[in-house]
Length: 237
Image (cartoon, rainbow, N blue to C red; front, side):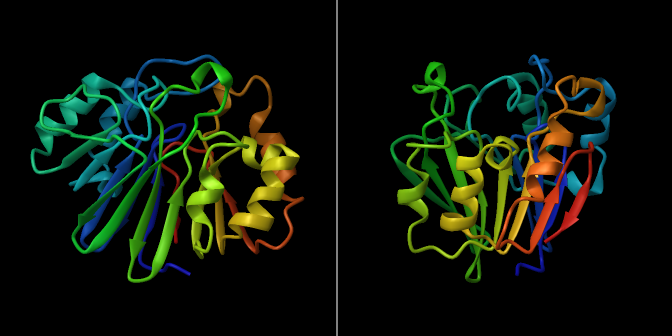
């Protein structure tokens, strides 16, 4: 198990992954409300720019640029506050960013390898959206953020074949749907599974959180399963 990392949720699919000398934001800043999901309120925005768990990011990256994952305005604000941070995204919105392109890009930051792999986004209407998963390798340990990739045919299986994954961050449909549960337990087989991309209580009109909790109990073979449901919830990895 990875025991040096600390994961903090912003809202929805936003994460800060932090260790003693490295802080990576993944889809952490967005502000435009998407139906059925949550976004950063003005209070949340103030918090994210003052929280120790999000302080001094080295990397500000985005798996894709949908409104529930990315805000150009907040990205520009973060880059101004943290000018040394490396901004990485699959669409060219920010001056000086690293543009994700092609099937795979590898970037080394403070002796950790960040691999971005293009994966098909869930939903036929989003199949052409530039969308990337992220794997962080730290001294032989691997953290995988699968983002919004499709449950089938995304390219994820080919990517992680023959890889031992320590921690996986997976959106809730991966446990709510049988095919997702089977992929997690038979193919990914992480030591730790963290389920996220869930709405806050005030936006959870379809009971996604309750359904995800129930489905998580049906997982077999993964001993450490957690849900990140609350704004700025923290988990030690």
